[in-house]
Each structure stands twice: as C-alpha cells, then as structure tokens.
Length: 244
Image 1 (cartoon, helix red, strand yellow):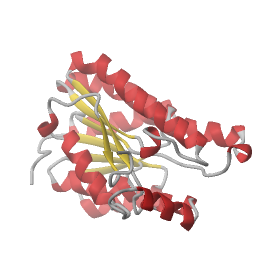
Image 2 (cartoon, one colour; image 1 turned 180 degrees about the horizontal axis):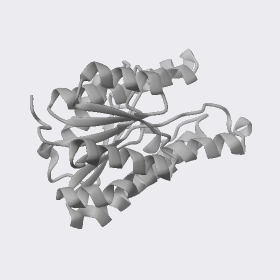
Image 3 (tube, helix red, strand yellow; image 1 turned 90 degrees about the vertical axis):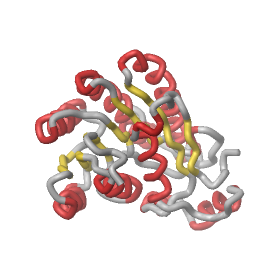
Image 4 (cartoon, helix red, strand yellow; image 1 turned 30 degrees about the horizontal axis):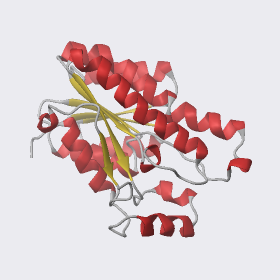
C-alpha cells in the first residue's frame, strides 16, 4: 500500500469498467483522484463512495473547456497534478463498407482528439509539480490488425504514435508518457461485439481467457508510480499474449 502516496491523478472515463478499477486502486494506494466521465450519476456515486480523496467532474474529453475544468479541479481541490490516465474511449464494430464518415469522426473525437487534448492540458500543471506520468490507454488494436474496427483501429494506432511523440518531447520536463494496450477485457465495451467475435479474440490469445479490469489497473498503477521512473515511450500489452 502507499505506492501513490502524495500523488494527484486524473482518470478519464473513470466511472465504470477499467477506469473505475484504476480509480479504486489509485485511491487504495494513497492517491487523490479526479474521476472524469460523461456518466454523471455513476461518476458521482463512485466519488461519494470513496470519500474525500476522490472528486468527480463531468467531462467530455473532446472539449477543450472541459479539460481545463478537470485540470483546475485537480489543482484547486488537491494542490497539484502528477498523473493522467487517458482512459476514456468508445468503439464501433462494422465492415468498412458500413462505417459512415460520422462513425469515423465520432470515434476520433473521443479516442484521438481526447487523448491529444489530455496530453496538452496537463503539461503546465505537471511542470509545476516537478514532473509527472501520462498513461494513454490504447489497445491491442493499436499494435496489430483488427477486422471490422477500422475507425477504432485508426484511433488506437494514433494513440500509440502520440505516446511515442509526446514521450520524446516531454522527457526534458520529467514527464513520462507510456501506453497500455488491453486485450479482451471484461467491461461493457465487449457488448459492441458479437459473442463470436469475442470468442475468436480469446482463442487468438495464448492465455485463452478474458482479462479483468483489475489486471489493466495493476499495469497502470506501475506506470503511474515511481517504480517505473526510467520508463517512457513504452507500449505495454496486457492482452494474454494476443500481440505476440
């Protein structure tokens, strides 16, 4: 316990699924956490449950103004900002011929623009804090080919690329930037796929099982903590071996 003592974090999409697991683990390990999400009732309930160390803000990650609000809340409520987990994301499954431009742009606005705005928004507060750690949640689809998810794959490859670029640029500010690449994880996002698609993805992974949100949260905790102090620009698969 206490691996994040003294640190303040923002976790986007923190109201449920992987984000909720990260928030709970961060709080248990001593961090103060701002939970941001468009799921207002769930986000507020989680913050109320976890107490004074956790605050909630409604947050559309594609909005510059709402990013400014989330960062201001972290600094005003908890005094600093050390960690950002760009966890919020959406997906869409369909053959390419059935992907509309609107589908494509909607995915990019959250998964790509949202991550870009997050990285950009936390630079100044992390410089004021003396450094920090940005963890971008990409996907196995950001490392290897994925059928029927062209918009999602485009967004997650973008996250992988932005992670590398930001790591190069921000190292001089003692800001580390790494990405985590989940495989098939037991979250509501699985519901966008058919059961057959999920089964096929599980069969492709050597470990032959679905992962749990806590397994992603543990990897994110390591990257948020000082235990990973010499890691930046890394792309960390947590996928049961699917991207081997």
